[in-house]
Length: 388
Ligand code: NZQ
Ligand code: ZN
Image 1 (cartoon, protein in one colour):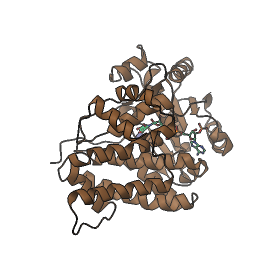
Image 2 (cartoon, protein in one colour; image 1 turned 60 degrees about the horizontal axis):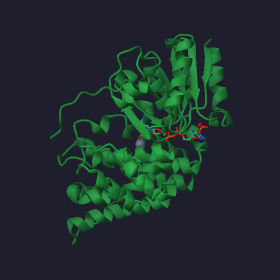
Image 3 (tube, protein in one colour; image 1 turned 90 degrees about the vertical axis):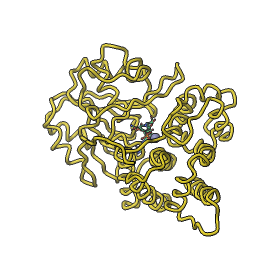
């Protein structure tokens, strides 16, 4: 049965080739001091930086640059960003980049005025925000995480070998996000396909849970079909605007809280993937693809009906004359073939994981209770071994 819920997504989205112009509508709503937050320099190479600087200047803003946000942002970088934001009385953090930059901006937004240590408060103790929050706006340049329309903020602590996401509430969602599919044409193929699988896995994490008849699952099936179709076009022609725009939009819907409403969700692949990320610093989507097949084959018998439905509704597996197990397995085979066709990393050893890391990775993979099977430590180690 569809559970009780409330739903509000406060992020205003501007989508399309002229979306950046709408920065002119948003900027006047905020004070003068803007922290322009970006990564390692891709926005300087593709010209987005110049366009944004000229819009900020035209709106009379004072710009404080916060560059060098790394993929999988670290707790040290978070402390630096907090200092910059607080010392300069920042009125708006404008995040220009992918999930890492957007996540980091949200983490700074709640941490700059936090009197406690933000890593301990928000990540180790998972406490709510009870201090001033700096508003965040995003210009998205990389597709996959959904960070442009959610409260997620994942931070890595390399010393503690932990990568943890805090899912903050609506008060931390970006106030606005500008999505121009053409901005995503320049990211490397490796990043593009990692993003494709991140989207797919966000949907399967929310789909493979529960036995009830639930509207969210039908929406998820539509999103998966759109992604599979468009990814096959984009892999051949990365500059296909139609395919890339559909993928960008699917990514947003895959993790803007809608498809989780009224149902239970799993998130175990993400827990294992994040822990692999803490050990390897690998691209997020690849940490997920590398463990997914072993994980889904392991839990399939516990959620057989849903895996059968997935095979038929998403992968068009014919059901006549086959057992439920055969149908479900064929669906997973087709997903695996699709993943290999994209060129995703399918083994954790290819990400640099070695046998001696497996116990630690399993310890950092926090067990989730919403999926078809609550995994114990040894089961996670077994799944990791299967993924080597
Ligand atoms: O740093 P620059 O130079 O900008 O290069 C980036 C970075 O190296 C590059 N890039 C981005 N846009 C580009 C581009 N290169 C050329 N042209 C462009 N247009 O791509 C690299 C990767 O960027 P990153 O932001 O790290 O990728 P992604 O969007 O996949 O974000 C990953 C982070 O998001 C977290 C992950 O754990 C990871 O830390 N997640 C956030 C979630 C959320 N907020 O809900 C959920 C996800 O499951 C995920 O955990
Ligand atoms: Zn993800």
